[in-house]
Amino acid sequence: MGRALSVVILTKNSAAYLDEVLQSAAFADEVLVVDGGSRDDTLAIAERHGVRIESQAPWRGFGHQKQHAIDLATHDWVFVLDSDEVITQELREEILSTLQNPQATGYLVPRLNYFFGKPIRYGGLYPDATIRLFDRTKGHFTPDEVHEKVVVNGPVASLHHPMRHYAYEYVAQFIDKQNRYAQARGKPNRLKALLNPWWTFFRMYVLKLGFLDGWEGFVIARLYGQYTFWKYIVRKSV
Image (cartoon, rainbow, N blue to C red):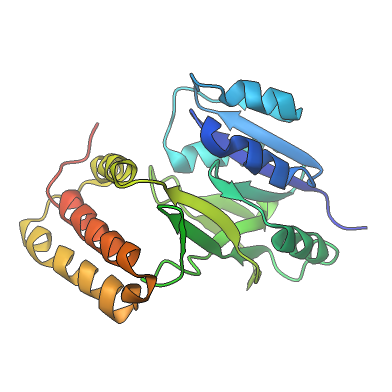
């Protein structure tokens, strides 16, 4: 018999993909949704799936919000899933097999990012692996407002099958989200604002072979270059 698992999902106006996300997590011993004050159909969808629902509002930033969520989980082994990510059947089987006899404290999980309806495999955006499966008694989230990460006390291994991440469906969605990220972590630096955007584009499109993703690869590299510019010209919002 394997270790019991809690899948933890943060939500806030997350109705778009939540049906598919919750269906993919249904194999877990517990599915915990921690909502940050949704005003759309998020809570109705979660209730329809019969998952455990808790509230944490107002929003405290991703690091604090995720740490609070894993503190609420019933089981020590947790898988932290974003509300636009789907656990594939192959990944589900790998998770269950791993939990039969865990050999590490935390496990890196790759993500296959979908931009504008297309899976993106180049530009440095794959495997995009982060620790998602871990023993919460030996790990925690950093308190960063954005780009938080899991730190574990013990060995880290890797799973091989990726989850599916619906990153952005259209350009305006990317611009809006990255603008909010830039305001959350803004560190004004005029020199970096001039130089780093060009390097970001060149690294993603040429060095990381983004051109192999076709037109989408060019658009993505261009947008990330623009985001790099934003984060060095705006001041952090209070």
